[in-house]
Length: 478
Image 1: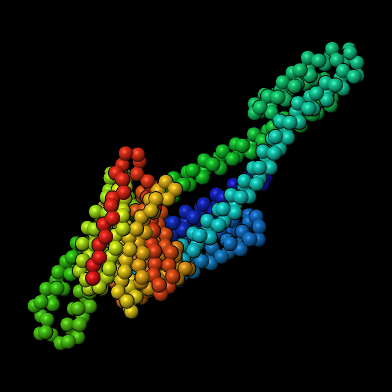
Image 2 (image 1 turned 120 degrees about the vertical axis):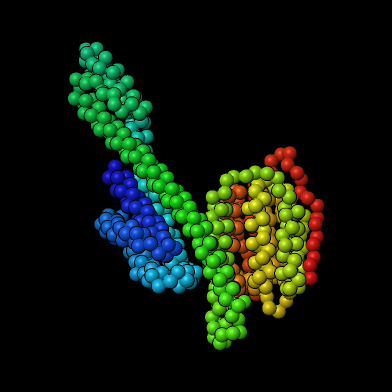
């Protein structure tokens, strides 16, 4: 019982730490986006709560390994708060552009992602300890279930052996006792055991009742822990929805002032271009370029938010036709790079045409963007049926990706290259991952540096009666 209670307490504290980190990130991001000082008050409260929860869990750590993970987690979060977060807050007080540049570097997201991974390890380890404690409790209950009838029979045999008179005297009590023990073994913990008048039986009955009460208490504690876990999951889901809604609204509201800045800057360039000194023309060009990058970033953020909050849509979508349309949209880029794009036989699937377009367009655009400098891009789009699902792959002969970055590239604002090396905001693959998960699938990558990459995503197979796979639609552009 003590093991179960301790494990449940530690799980609660770990969940509190997880909630503290969510509150820290939400309030800090809120200030960076809006510049409103009111977001710094919940940020300060979240820091204090995190420090308090770390201290409480430190005093109840079950193992040296758990304590080590806790100290590492504390160091990571404090490093984020005093380093990246403080720098972004200070930069936001000066200008939104400076803060956006720091956020785009992604160091803060990587630090918090590492902290969340460590929290996941701590939750998994603590769940194992809780499962082991509960397993021991269940074994105790099974021992009670098996031992009760045997004990009753032994007691009855001893009474018969003692004397017939004693047997007649205690027979009824023994029968009641046996029924009570069987009721306890069946889970009726509130039923009392009838006293038999035989000291040994009464002592044994008291022990059975004590064990049954302990098992009942453990089951009650387990139910309370399960309810607390469900409540924590509900709160976390609500926080995620609120954060996504906030990002959408903030990005949407930024478009109008940004559009005004861009319009007036372009007007300056048209009216006064060449009339001022060269440095002024350069400043205007820098402003136009930065405004366009910020506009693209906001549009990508809105696309990501729409994908995350999209309602389930299930309609037939011809991937062959959709892919051909996307290649047509990219015709200028294909011609500029001298690329060859091959579309193999692709199926008709059930899903959202809008989200599937996001996925394929992001993957095809990346295949053309991250090309090798010594050869023209060669892109192949294929599909195969596998274990009740469709797997669609986009293969290229580009620069490739190091294996240690396979998981990282699907995060928001994750870039493996300098901002001026390749255009983009670092959101495209995050949109692709969200769209795949929205369809009940997943996305992954296989790559060899210098040789190319294969990005694949899975989709549930179309239900019976859906259109069969479409025919081969080869398409080559040079």
